[in-house]
Image (cartoon, rainbow, N blue to C red):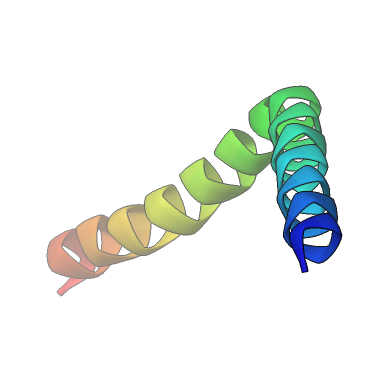
Length: 52
């Protein structure tokens, strides 16, 4: 039973490290996509307010 829990904790730790490295390398891309998703509705509402 101990070996299973040890293997599980090792897998979880390695998964967390992999996630951190993936997020770290792709953080600019994720941020740019998020900025687009935030900026487009804001600009759209801004334009609709002035064109009315």
